[in-house]
Image 1: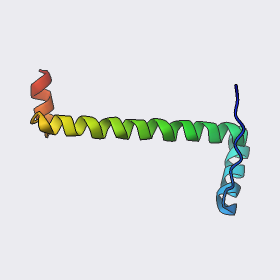
Image 2 (image 1 turned 90 degrees about the vertical axis):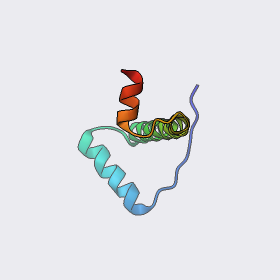
Image 3 (image 1 turned 180 degrees about the vertical axis):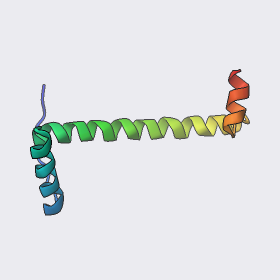
Length: 72
């Protein structure tokens, strides 16, 4: 199932998207879908990293060396 989303963009961003779509031979919808997907993946990654960082600090793992020693 698909959902339709209408997005309002500032003129300069819309122009940049148009130019990028033409340059790459892709349609704007595919570029926006890929961009949203990447943004959401990165947001999930940041949340997981933040959560794990707090747990690591509580366990005394502060530096990369600490982590290396713990897994070696």
